Amino acid sequence: MRKLVFVLTMLLLASSFAQADEVDEACCIDAEGFQHLQQERQGDLAILDVRSQMEFEYAHLPGSINVPDGQFRSNYDEAIKKLPTDKPLVIVCVGGIRAKQVYDIIAENGHDNLQQISALEAHMIVEDDGDVFFK
Image (cartoon, rainbow, N blue to C red; front, side, top):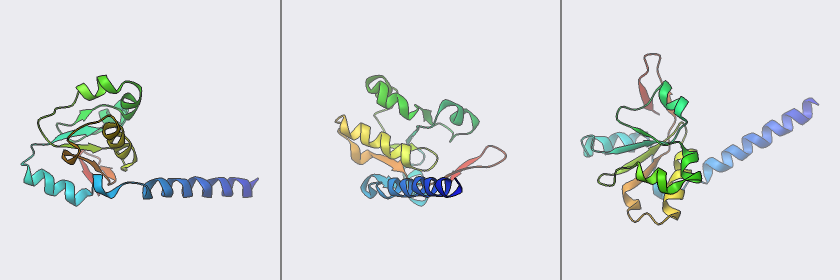
């Protein structure tokens, strides 16, 4: 039984690393790139947080918009209406996978300004005081 649990655990880990490797670098920025973009645009960015509502309520970046990733799968037309179209969009989640998935959904639905959209491939850190940053 222990061997089975170990094998299943290793398979899950391998699967998660494979998913992380599949992230398309062309669409993604890291934490440093995100900070640079914020400075360059003087904060004039739309930040889409695709985590669950509960995760968002716990802590989020100031000014970010919460549209959970599942809404893009279940009702794309309504989800996309919640986003501003007049500024670059950075999609964030905890570790980058959901952000990349939403980026792909937007791309597959013919969004014509993908160079203005980035998935943040970084790990979200929430401090005790509720401050959020990416590493």
